[in-house]
Length: 282
Image 1 (cartoon, rainbow, N blue to C red):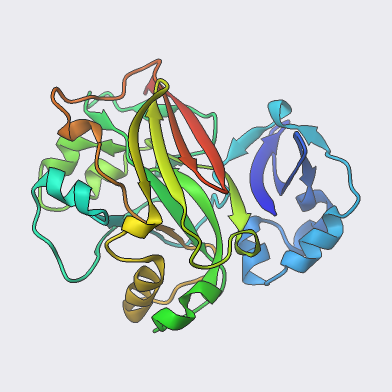
Image 2: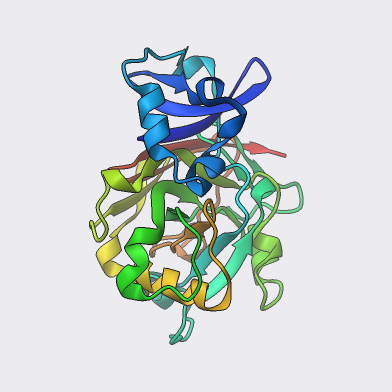
């Protein structure tokens, strides 16, 4: 299924994509499964599929506002320098373990919503990434078992305010300005994408391809990331792992390419879809 969180007439709900519209599963399943995170927590995909069976769409996509698929994740882990070409363009040393930082939920917007360039900087950069959403609780997960803990996949733009990111050795500030990251358009459940499937990632800025890679080129694979993270924290349903960006970011181009108001940035992941955001000033 393609699961979405959306707003219609100032009411937030969740559902699944059907043709060119959305089936409102929040209305059908009620308080027992109030959101996508609860669906994953309760391992209730079968209930969602049953509720959607033979149903017509309740809303056309152009009549709703898509929010991040998981608007309330407990944790958002971002992995830095996880493609070799990006590590090389940043001139950073190799590390034996994944480089991990975090984002906060308010730093994200959904599909077709504006990413905001903060008034404190003009150095807003794109980072196309594949988001992995955890589907079940786990601690100290072995790599060989990791795929069974994946609940689904989505597209992610780890929008980065570079001068704030580079101001210190810690990246938190530059990665967490409000509404600087994109997440969506939906979550494709793991039963649609078997574990180990090679996924292609493409970033386009105003229709021009800026990044292109596949998961075969990840330095630390998705199972490795799950094993590493679950060693030191408990992974919970709805947690998000943003798995890394490839080379080609705007900051490392000559001259640098910064996102500006009016730009359109797209993150495409094969078998998932396209996340599209415009850029606006905050």
